[in-house]
Image (cartoon, rainbow, N blue to C red):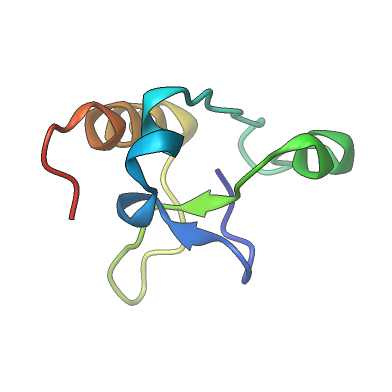
Length: 74
């Protein structure tokens, strides 16, 4: 997960990507290493309201796990 400009909103991942996914979570502030980003098949972001720039890693993990576990993705 990353706020990078090329990241796809997490709810847009397809069924195949959801079925066998692994979340890579970086340290708050520093984020993921370049090597971790390069090893990823997909970069995803949690869309947020204007003015909110990030979630802490625990909150982001909870949101991502909930989203990936949904039976009816958007």
